[in-house]
Length: 547
Image (cartoon, helix red, strand yellow):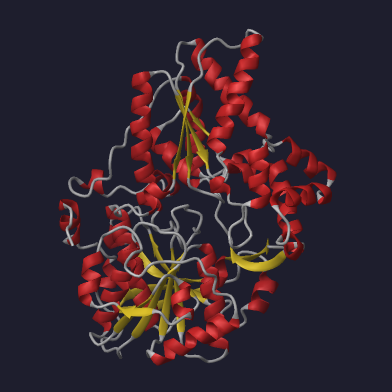
């Protein structure tokens, strides 16, 4: 297979590890934990894995370990660094005992259920070190939530002598890992389950999980391209660029990119919700900045929009919640009728307030909200062209203002959506190191007999040698939420905190960014060179940890 010069050079990169993981480790148990919320409900659902302590690794421990057969699953959307998590698991279990073996289940959880797997040997692992993508074994979005799935998986785990399974995924995938760990412990299956925090959206984080892997690389990739657009914007001086970014449930990607590139306008979904803003409020805000810049001869600018903005608008959020319950409760009937009949059915059954909102939306958007759902019944917000919707509505408002003499200028737009461009980028040095450490650390959790834990690597704005390794019980991150009309245990998503340091820093600067042209051009990810260029963490982490 032909490789680029960068692929060849990156294959030789040896990721950095926390110093504590370079030798034998011993476990230091912290205090018992409780769930993020809904303590009684979560404890009742997870009696065998609830309340376990946070663990931290320290130097020491035994040298001799029995061989470990371990399985690994890549679950959900791709994120840069997944291959290094697998490399870290492989190197970790081989260091514990060279006779240890690693098996990858193919195309996500389906591989476990349908017994599709391959042994990951040194020659295979070496082909994928420090590369982007999940193509070593593929990924999938099947949810592990039924006992018949667990039992079917257990058949192949026992056949292969696998004593531990590592699930690499986001909040839903790790919720499923927790359910699986609980079930296997309850029936005495003798199989441990460990999770690893993956999502470029950045919404799987807490005190013990400082960042999900892939967020650093993805936001750096997006920021490079946004910076290029800003440079073009400042050169041509005739377009407003509306740029939608990944992040359905939280606006972390948009906030991080804003901190890196200093655009004229950035919308943060969590702020929209907190201020109870309407779609017209948002349009008026954008139009006001456009008009102000035009009055000073600047008919150009950049606008960053989070993918999930529509769901943060309180009135539309209420509409979506009712739509979800309505469709879930009438799924059988809904599946037998055509698109127009579905729209008519929805209009006839919505409450008056939500029907008014539904009817006020552009026809294309209302149809997407009603008809286009993912396999879990969720609105596919990435398909809603929010950036184009906003641009069109701003143009309409500016045209009205022009008639009233409130606006003089030209408004031409370009639209972009950056999503897949960042999901499989070659991992930054930070993600290469962090992911390798997460995988190696998972091997140590397995060796210590842990189950129902998520691999945790902290103190990540310090040099990698000073990172703190250990694990957090997955139940400690869980609460109850309504999903498809039912209350379900899930890992609580971390939203942008409006009183947090990253948002406060952004809020203090955005008015100046709106008025002036103060673009920053980050350029491409650098893998070789001075540490201050190559090893920087995200702005989000730097502000959160005051670095």
